[in-house]
Length: 183
Image 1: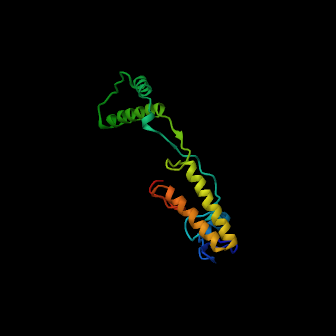
Image 2: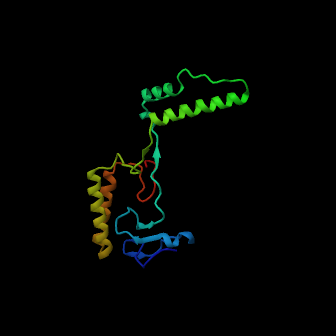
Image 3: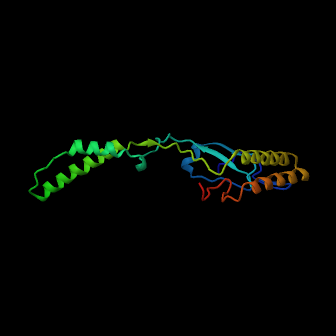
């Protein structure tokens, strides 16, 4: 278990308990840093737990987008490398050798015409906008105030702010703090 401290992870009205725990493999224990209970509103009775797993940095992901292939470059490269080339084919081994040459030439031409690009990893959500951001901030502020004061009127203000955010969210199929179908 990597929980740190005794900050409440469950807040239902005036009830505050440490009910959520984080378990990890013992091999990763030394790599977990910054475990904390967040003070933002998760639109649930359970508070968000955040931590980092620090390991060696992974190499950036690169991909080719076939839609961005420059087919004129591909054609030029392929023609320059193959041209009017004919190999000598007398045996099945000759066929395999010539097929390897053609295969390699086609792949090299494609790689030149469609270079790999780094993927940023940042996925912007088309449904998120400034108004939702402001409403979310208000709900977070109301939650923080209610959590600290414990007063019923502050909890009611929090429920109202959360309802307003959810209402204006437009019914998008998103679960806060969890992966959704839209992601």
